[in-house]
Amino acid sequence: MNLTISGHHLEVTPALREYVLNKLERITRHFDQVVDVSVLLRVENLREKDRRQKAEVTLHVKGRDIFVEQANEDLYAAIDELMDKLDRQVMRHKDRLQDHHHAAAKRMEVGLT
Image 1 (cartoon, one colour):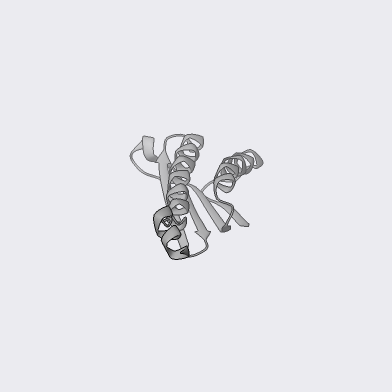
Image 2 (cartoon, rainbow, N blue to C red):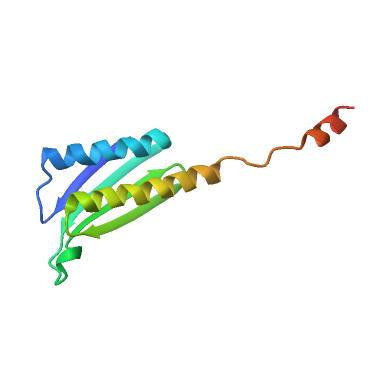
């Protein structure tokens, strides 16, 4: 898994990097076929103080790219909400990949005789 963590208008400290890595472990625990992850943390100069800190992630899995963004007044809270959204989307993607259409037992027995 390739991981890129970058920041716009802020320095990505080792504490922020470690926090993002710990949160990403939950995603990789649910779905291990992650190819590439790109995390972008930024501070925007908006008039709204409550939406100033923004976190974005682009997750490349086999066959699909998943993009999620979240803004909050606290960067750590934005990362938490971002990972919750990402987890839901990854679980939905994993559920779509699994084959839920099993052959009925009656049809299998008829085919054998």
